[in-house]
Length: 176
Image (spheres, one colour):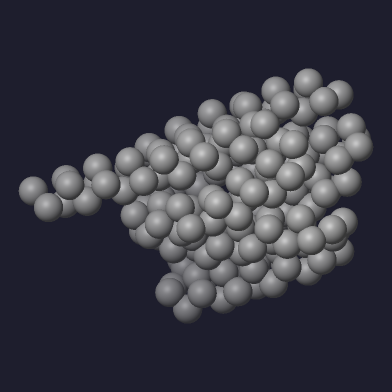
């Protein structure tokens, strides 16, 4: 079970890294939705292997997958006000689900990361998305280390570097 969990974590990691290299908000959201689904499976399998804190990761990734679909479906008609409301609503849902699946203070790390991630993906500006991902990554990485999520730990480390690289590349291109 643990090996299968780590395989899904690695697959999610690959999709996540690719997502930050994509050019449009929509492309990033599609990839992040797939990544969240893969991480749901990953953390469920880790929880079945005896890692109690992994249930928070599974539940919050599930919320994030739903959030990403809602953001995709509302993209064209979304106003700035609606975007802000969705960010607040999904941040509250993340916090509530995080508390309901709370196993130990380790869960708080992932709750913080997913609230930041929710704010990030609610902003239809790829560079701002990358900035918030870079802020949330250390919280998620600490959670992943403590839940023994190899794929998650590598994902957060490399995603941070990938988001930073893409951010710097885009800034350089904009300066030209």
